[in-house]
Amino acid sequence: MASVIMILLLAVPALCDPVSIYPEHEVDDEIQYLGCFRESRNPVLALPVHHGSLGGCIYERFIQCRNTVINHGHDVFGFKRDDKCFSGDTAADTYDMFGYSNNCDYDAEAPCSSNARDVFANVYKTTSCQKEMFEIFCNNGGTIQIVDGFYGRNGAGVCGDDAEEGETCQSDVTNILKKLCDGETYCTKNTVFSVFGDPCNHQPKHLDIRYYCGHRNLPPLDLGNGGDDDDEDSETEGDLIRLGCFRDVQIGDGRALPEAMGELNGECSSILEMCADLAVHYDVFGIRPAIDSTPAKCFSGDDAGDEYDIYGVKDECEGWNAREVYAYVKRSVTCQKEMMELSCDSGEIRILAAYYGWGGLLDVCGNEVDAESPCVEDVKEIVQGICEGKTSCRKNTVMSVYGNPCPDDRAKHLVVTYYCGHPRLPLLA
Image (cartoon, rainbow, N blue to C red; front, top):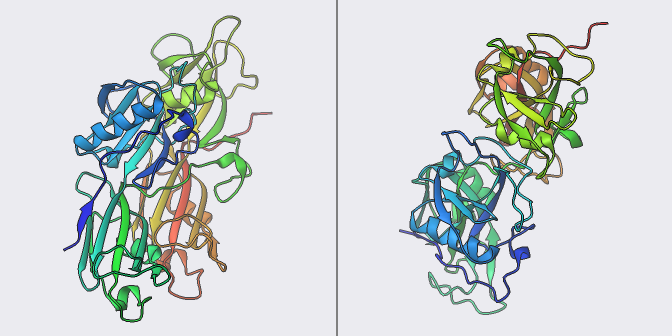
């Protein structure tokens, strides 16, 4: 049976250069960079275990963090470039629970109050000889996410592979493995010709697989730059949608956004990004603008998605009772025949966009992003008819609901973007 191995230590370069990790995040082939994610300041944390302060320059801190996490048996870890390392027993499940952040690229020598984490996954490698069963798994949360896979002979000296230079022969079987294993917690299959073909004309071959445990590695939503997720009638920035400027009361129990999340001084990033990081436990938040020498302030609450507009729209977003209100935009990606699930803790589901098909969307469900002949259908109206105005919505992703935009049986997937709140209404004349 094939064994899963992982190299536990990284060599520290002679020069301790922050560029070794930032901004490209190209560390080595045993680490997968997952992105910059928001973290909460409340008791429920995406990466709950803090491994203490780290010493040395930024690269040395990173190496300490990674090796500490491996020793704890965790698959995913978060790194703050000041001196902090985070992970957890269920980190592979929870690391992205508060969404992407734009606040990871701050000055390491003058860190500010950003709660964002650069998140990495340890990459595992398994090698299986021809006709053996390969076996890969995620025991600590998350699901299998294939990085790449190759089948053939490359002179590795395993499984009878004694190929010399010029005699190598191998096929990229990444897409085959993605279709077999992505999204599963356990995956096994016989390494045979009928599955992977024969790139080497009956000579001994082996299968190399690299994978990590986590979630589908989707790119950050960027609703402001057009593309599949863009809603041309929306005011958007990153993964946030502006709902408008609304009135609120200053004192008492009747505030629309009752919980003050903190002042926004703008030293790390825009006040919008700071408030978005502070309010990650909620669906909707509001910003009171700065007034004279008083900094802007962030507000939200458990019922923010229901209550933010109870005092009506304000035409000029100025003064103590003004709140510039935003909602987090959520994205659901569902493979064909899986169950689509949308939900709102407060407010109601409001669909921004929905697409169904193959090719030209995301690197999920065995899809080919660079396919020459993509087949994609806009199904926004169908999803609106099923889910709009509800607090939760489930529906099977099948042809009888969404049709078949592809001329054959290619595996398809559904991408839905939505927010939680109320319909966006214009000002009364």
